Length: 565
Picture 1 (cartoon, rainbow, N blue to C red):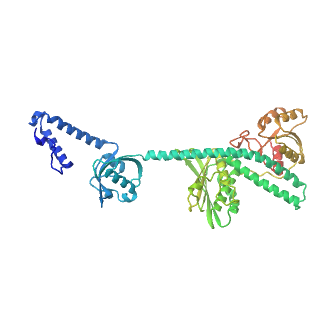
Picture 2 (cartoon, rainbow, N blue to C red):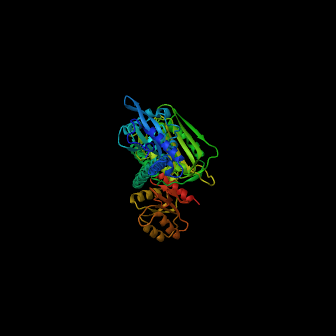
Picture 3 (spheres, rainbow, N blue to C red):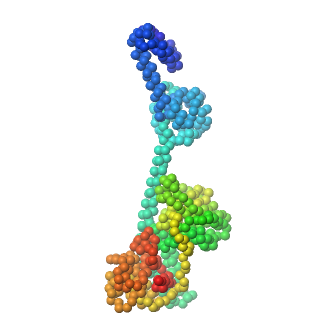
């Protein structure tokens, strides 16, 4: 066998990959000139299969290298004082160039190709240096700052001072993981809020019953006391405390989405315009209140009094966050929420919304505070300065009306709340409810009063009797039906609790309708439990008074129902 056709085992020192390539090139040239068979080479026939295998393996390697879907780069470390500080690209495949966006890098240092890479990501250079120095292969996932992408990276060393990098882009997978974690957190938050809401609704129900008794008896007692005298003053303070407590329970019910509401189709800009003077008094003179709204705003279906609650809570919180002069801005605009936005916000649904924004120039919030602001009783104010129910109330109101709320805030940069209420497609009605005229109105009609709480039954009985009505009382639905059957004259009005044993107030009203076709109904409850309302929205045509109520409120509502068509 001729020596120039083989790789010798005793080639001179220093022969490297370049010399081998020259020899492989010579081999290839000879094969190209050789004709059809090994005999044409003029040498041993046994050398032909070995040379052919060599050429085929080189072609296979070259094909794999160029067509590999993973990025491949062969590099050599360079540095000063024995410490790796840079590396040279010796070979890269097409996938490496495509996945990194780096082109024409062979023969160049990394510091030339990617200026500032060492300073931006020194940890990556440390890994390359460690592996090139003989360390174990490493595999890891990393966000490469200078390339602005996530990569799955494998590094190994083919020779001392050299390293090979295999990489794949995993940015989409990483983003999907981040989105999944975010959605799971939003789901846990929604579940927690729902659980707390159910608890709040139950507590408010019992508390409202007790407050009804306190407020009713306080009202009755004040009628027999001399104004200005000590007993009358004391009773006034009791009544004020009870009314403040009633406000707290109303906020709890709003948060729990068990507050009974009467939505109206309205233009939100008219509601906001009507409350601006009151908001200005709440926030004080040193804070500017700015109101902006688009023309041709879409109508919404919402209880106007709830918009008042939302704006009052948000503006008071905003003013508390501003030290000295500042600005609060209220804006309304039409807004289209698409599928892409909903994909990153679990509680949102795509559609057309009217957006109500409240922004301030206050101190802003940290991420930790922002994560808890809608929790009931959470507050950053000093002890006694706030109940922690303001934003919980806002959250409950917006969810009850089928809307969504977001908050953007950073320390020192203020806060913006965006509230999205579904667009209503229909005829626009009067924007604000009419006030109930007069207080303490009297009457002579016959009323059937049904209440399972004896203390409430007694106080409501006393109020209605004092106002001139004939009252038939029962502490359960069965007795109420029996009373109605035995009563010889007309019963004009049924005043009944909603939640009772045996039969709820709505079913009782339906049963009595057969006995007295013209009887009118007034329902009362601390919360409706979806019996006469769905998601807290009062069924059309039903009359309702929320516990606890004052004597003037009850007297006015009874008269309103009796006088209605």
